[in-house]
Image 1 (cartoon, rainbow, N blue to C red):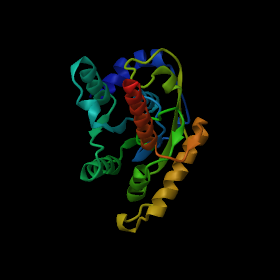
Image 2 (cartoon, helix red, strand yellow):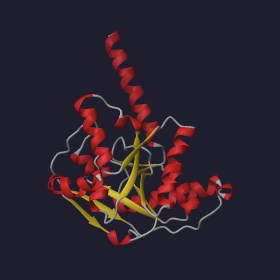
Image 3 (cartoon, rainbow, N blue to C red):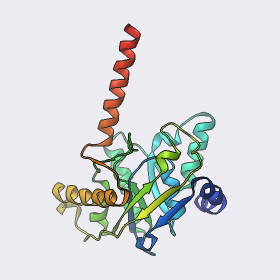
Image 4 (cartoon, one colour):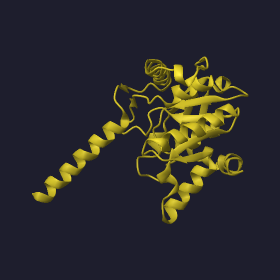
Length: 237
């Protein structure tokens, strides 16, 4: 399997370059389904977590990572496939629900599923409001949630940077958050929001990040709009 080729074959190279240390791996269940819910600072987060986990972790990644052209596109597709990432269409609706159904099946089969609760990489290194996907999966399956913090990856891989610089990183695994399985029809939005906020707060305590009660996607859209307005003003000048 490509995943184990990456961990066993390329793992030593990745460890030498990114030097990931870990703490709290005893909090990862040795068997059965569990959700590894983490922050998201850089693309390499999806490699650092598997490198420090004693078990394989399945992640979902945006479909664009698997559709790129040229050398960079082929490298990205190979990289994400190697570390256990499966593509998901983030346009919403039934396509997004299909990805959650896939994740639910992974958990019910007794595997680990990794998810970045912010839904996208942080635009500035801060921790942003969590989406309720992890909470939904936890309540529908009864699987525990392991809050996880990646530290230092943004310093090694800036946005748009393909090959990470050499340096050190950390992955911290917190105490599992235990939940009781519920019928999907009985789960309320208030329950989803409360559990999501609890997960994000646990990640914040591990990572030490400043928290922003706003979705990262909203902030990114605002930054993009400002950049476009600035560029337009410059062209008119």
